[in-house]
Length: 324
Picture (tube, rainbow, N blue to C red):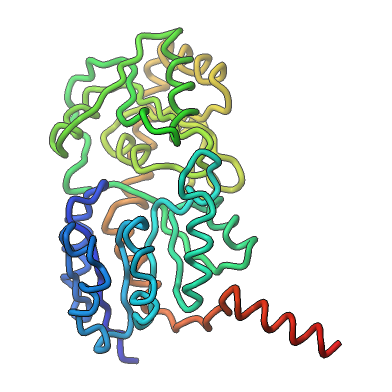
């Protein structure tokens, strides 16, 4: 069977660096990767017009949602469209300015294959009629690793808290900080990020209310931290292989987080055992190479039958009602 010819449209200066993932995809014979600059993405309609997409069987779109929505007419024409979207959970977040927007856009792209990073998120889209594939977030194995350095930071969080989307995250961090010396950190390069993670014993993840696990969980586990993360529920943990107090530490309330941090500080051998098991899990399943392999697998599948658009579905329903 002839393998499909695949075009990947990626982005420069990505929030999560996909340099290795893009290079791995490009190393495959039938895959072309084009990394778009910010100016090209800003004028996406014109950019797509300059690319001969007709010679491809599949186009994988890994571009910011906020920019793609301005070029939907051009995107709709892409052959074998696959949308790889890591922020699709924002469709359901009450505090997100994109609440409901993803759903509206995806209904206008009935032939697209949707790839999201959370099982709970995917199930919510499936409940409203979308066929969604899941590839969880992961870590760049070429940039993030356990260097076995001295861990001189007992408890820390790395990340943003300013956005309104992260209100619950901030509240959780403030609650825990009232009980412990919690370092809230920011880093500015991949090397600094790796070095900082390797200084942390207990990494507090605060992905509260998102329904899925952000990349920092996998990145911290890869660097040998004991990760303390918010239990997302549904069947997220089962699908990911996360087991509480075995390869990750899960909490559902700030009080539970505080209780478990006390235990980990009192039992450093247990914390180290959990960290080691967590590192082994993510190295086995959640590297960027693994993400790329899953994208390739999805791209090699036969094209799914297009969903009717929302307006088309309404027309069909109206005709069926008149026939009755």
